[in-house]
Length: 387
Ligand SMILES: [Zn+2]
Ligand SMILES: [Zn+2]
Image 1 (cartoon, rainbow, N blue to C red):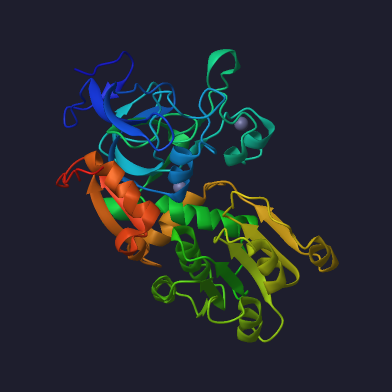
Image 2: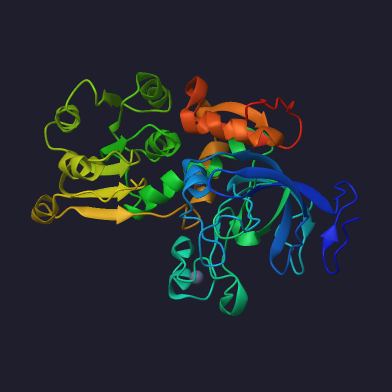
């Protein structure tokens, strides 16, 4: 029975000594194994994972490696468990924790910075200067579960209390996994200045962050909000989440369309979520002079950028990493108040044992998959032989 010293547990939530956990071998190779249930330390809790959403970044980590970094290098063959967009129930408290109680439902954000570097001290913990330094002689205690430490494709995980967001009782497990997605969009708009009420915003790319970017921008009062993309079915979901206009970039010139829809002058802000090859140039052509562009997606190739246009027009470019500045708390507040229905982007749920199938659905967009969730309990296992 799980009973580590100085850790509080509750009789309503018995904890086993070992748990199911997926681990990454070579690129793309995942194996279901048993691991010891981890033990929370000072300022940490143990979370029983109730649902995990798959993110495009999980696919980067699993197939390519970065941005995951384990023991200073690629994450392959290190007994590492990926997965980072999870929610669950607090089932054990490490020493000194009274901020959360056993039985409380929480969503998690990813980055617990080291807490001591310059960026952490500035509140920019997703840009911690000690990223991935949590081993050997250079251990700074940095954690980014599912990137630099074990993640959520398992049954239990430890989380620093700074990474927890308490969620409303009425919020389903599946919806709660989307708090971090909405939080990323919220962080992007925060970095752009946060004052988007009455300002024009284009969101490029109707993936999960883009679609919730539309919802968050609209909830913050932006007008008009224009969503651009290639798939009409995704653009339709954008309209349901509050977009005032949508543009299918295969049917018309996207820069001209955006200008036409906003009185000819271009927009104040672009939230770039498409990772399309020419996305940065299109974004800087869409904003007006002095406009701001947030880059929330990335390509694997380097791309030429029209620097002259950026300089001559005093355009600001921001890269963002993750869901910083406690944006998840603000996103959860919008979701709690039902300012938008994030569940419109949740399309599939599989059992934890069926993770390879779930990843395939997410990667190949099988059956128009957008957000695919896996759950350790309450979902029938359907292992597909070929996987
Ligand atoms: Zn993610
Ligand atoms: Zn730090």
